[in-house]
Image (tube, rainbow, N blue to C red; front, side):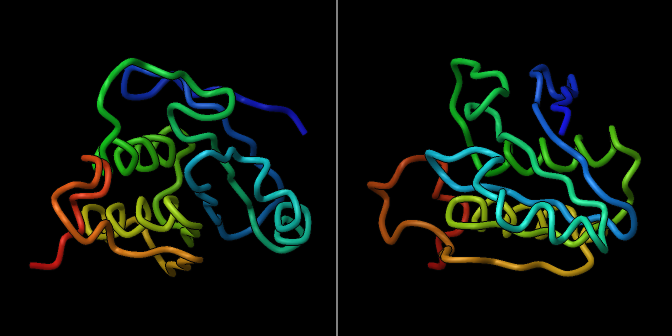
Length: 139
């Protein structure tokens, strides 16, 4: 599998694409990288076009010195989809990736067909959590 890079939102995002058919975007969690999806990547690619990416700050994607917010991560997914000329996809997120996907679908609902959230939540329960989690407070 060939790793590719997209220059989007001022950073290089590393990603891989495999298979044909309806697109599925896989978003990994904190402290992880696109290879987290190795058990799902090949089987899903038998029926779908599967895109897995390294979030900014992870794997082989750029690691700019900045605050990483849910909005920034969501914008990266949307921009990668635009770069790949994907108008709509199934979006799958695990852990922090699930939180990113929640923000993505709230901001860009027209880009998501089905959403799968794995082992995630909406954010941290109080104001002490890092900025990256505050988007989903349910006050």
